[in-house]
Every structure is written in structure tokens, then in C-alpha cells.
Image (cartoon, rainbow, N blue to C red):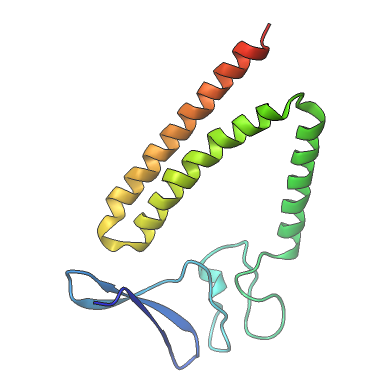
Length: 155
């Protein structure tokens, strides 16, 4: 069977529809991010996150975008963090080792596990188990880097 189909309703809003393998029935699935709502009652964004602005189809920010204060706060936080790291860290190898210890398990285990757990109906338990193993590996890698740095630069 088909893995997925997108169709339009009378309110011209896209709905994600997934075919449940082995069950033989179609069922509706909520989108990960809110789709634009052109009219109709209520806002599609209000069901998903407080970070997404309300969009009733009349102007304003498009649904699925972060609001201006949230974007400004995120930008300020990133710039402040990078500036602080650039001023205080004596060697760039420390930054690379910490970045590798956190991003590698996230990209290789956590994100694929969460995607499988969320999007593949038959692999929910395995996906979340992979994500859990990834978090444990991330903590282990970060601990190993911290011990190594303490041994190198500690007194």
C-alpha cells in the first residue's frame, strides 16, 4: 500500500492521512506543524504550540513561524552564548569535543528514533528505545569528554 497521502478538505486545509500497514484502514494524523487555516472556525496553530502565532487567515505572521519576541530571544541567546564561549574558552579543541559529544548521538540515535517513533506506526517502541539509548550515549560521551578535559587542564 501507499505510505501516505495529502488531501484537501472543504476548508482547503491539508490533512495528513496515513495508511496503517497490516490493519487495512485509513486514519487521519495531525501534522507536526500547524498548516495555514484559510477561514473556518478556530486556528490550526492553537492546537500545537504556544510558540506559534495565532492565524485566523487575516494577515499577521504565517502559521508555522515563530513569533517575533521568541525569534529575538533565541537570536540574542545564541549570540550571547557564542560570544561568551569565544571569550572564555582557551582552545577551540574544547568546543569541538563538547559539540561532537552532544551532536553526534543526537544526530545518529535520538532524532532518527524520535522520527521513527512518531511517524512509523509499527516502530513506535523501537524508535523511542533508540532515542533513549541515544540520550544515554550522549550522557556517556559528554561525561568522557568532561573527564578527559579535567585530566588535561585540571591542576
